[in-house]
Length: 151
Image 1: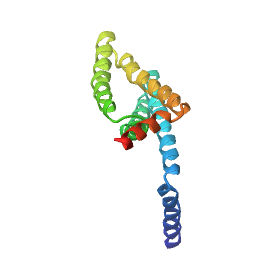
Image 2: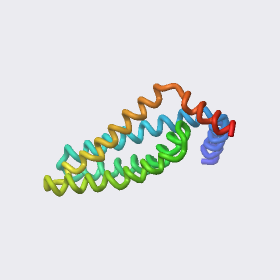
Image 3: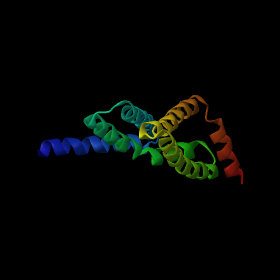
């Protein structure tokens, strides 16, 4: 048992050296962000498509595990690439509109399945936007940093 604990601690120290260098951590966070976005989309699709109790429980658990780290990861991902102010307005708007639209569709069609289309579409939109932002060069970030340094 002591040997396993010692190996675990050594591996933590080794990975800490990589994380402290910066670039490895950013790539890892980007991968985790992609995995959580795909987890959200898959779990909501599972909830929409199934009628079995056990599958609904698994989908709900997967949704909870995926949604938990999503906001801090998205916030750090976006704050690295853009000016600071607008993201908080968009986050507030999204957190107000998505639940309202989910309830509106659920009430209109009489089923939560139809309401879950809204967070599913939001998850797909975030996946597309993340993929598009990874393809663009980080010139806007460099320009922003240069302007803030010149001030």
